[in-house]
Length: 403
Image (cartoon, rainbow, N blue to C red; front, top):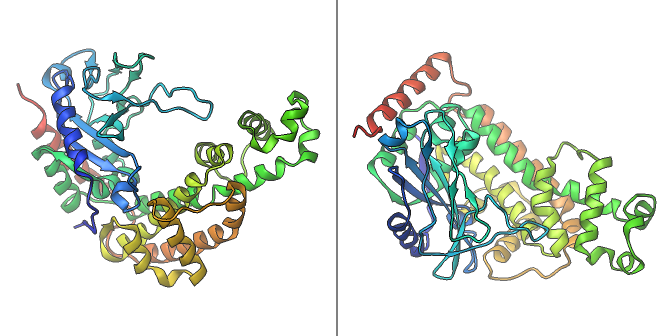
């Protein structure tokens, strides 16, 4: 049996938003079975200004199950102010779904519990001037039951660590089934913990290589330099457009640095560099250490732990005093209690060695604990896979609308 411990209190406005959402959306005959809060709110790492990440799961209604073309949840009549989310260039993200409710930004993901394999039509959000197409996660095969069957580590992690603000009996039953009956592979969860920790704590290696690329000697010998005016050259490090140009050129000649994925660098580290804000870097450090310690706690105790600071106390023996001081300083910054004021590139450079050392310490402990753990089977046997398939199939048959 896998359990969850040290859940954090979620803002009550999340429950109120969910009630308004259910009353205001057009379900198209589908049944909303769950709404849950994810992200910093669940880890004790949110501030008063933090947004709320909300995932909403639905079961397809009978009409959709027998239809050649199904419709997801329609969001164009919701009584909320639309929230724009923009990329690094200021362009509105077409796939983003966000609303403002009680002065808080809510980022919404809507996903089916399971689909029968057909295309899910996009829903048109008419309140959005850009006429945003809101697709469900089914477009990429991310429906919940399929992820659980294929032992997707993030799906399992989310199921235990997210905080439900609304749930029907169908969802409560699924959580009980996964917690008490479904076979879960320790290797799959280890892969998730290690991979996520690795991408967060080592993303700065791309940043440091990029910083070296930004020096004048490199630039003057590259194609980037010829596009710059004299003024742009003088203000190079402050110019968003020029950093983006340099980054594009950098990727052409440095496809991957030490195996790190470019998407991680682009999403957070590049944003930090362009906006001269350390928040994305702090978030990576905390996310990476949290997920590693969460894995350690699971393999040692058979439970998912939801609170960062308590986890840090639990595993404080893994770190030096300076490393603990750094991590606690990042917590104070992330929660808005005490901001760190320092130029972003200086901050990234100062954290370079500590991040690598922290990663090594957690990785060594996680790898050792994973090898010795007896909480979960390392790999699933064919028999276990068959039993999982039968459990999920029976569950799906029972909750499928009959009329």
